[in-house]
Length: 222
Image (tube, rainbow, N blue to C red; front, side):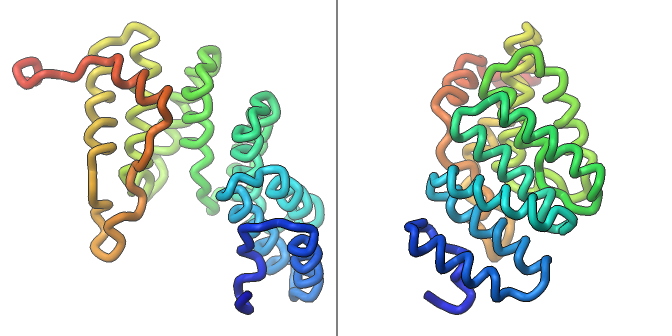
């Protein structure tokens, strides 16, 4: 393992955990330790080991809570891992903790607004739909927000599905068409990173909910 790879493991055996903690102790400064915990948790979550990711995130939040770069992102990662583990009540509380951190660290943009709104839509949490829409409005106010097709797809899909379920047919169809356009993109728009931020595979339930919304035909749009 390379010198800089010790906090990017994708396996988490007992030996992996011991080696990581030993290397963490030798790291200098709380900033470095907090970031290493968060980064390692991210890589474990990416391969589906959310329990181990949560343990590392909790360690970061407990031992280095004042690290403004790591903490807001750790709180979001924690909420997303709780959602992935099908612990919705804890995930909602986690997302709200991440939103609170946004107020404490306003210069650190994590994307929590879009992530929480997506969670609300995917889980069909109708009592929280108004909150989801407010979160999307907040997200759109950030400079540089919605740079990638995947972000624009999520925002359009959330708006389309919520509008459809509320009987707002024309609004729903318009946003569903925007979501389809973003899903069909094969280039990010970035010269040197053409594949970055593309939509990729869509959650089957979300795809079915979008498919139920009729597309706007050319004659209708004129």
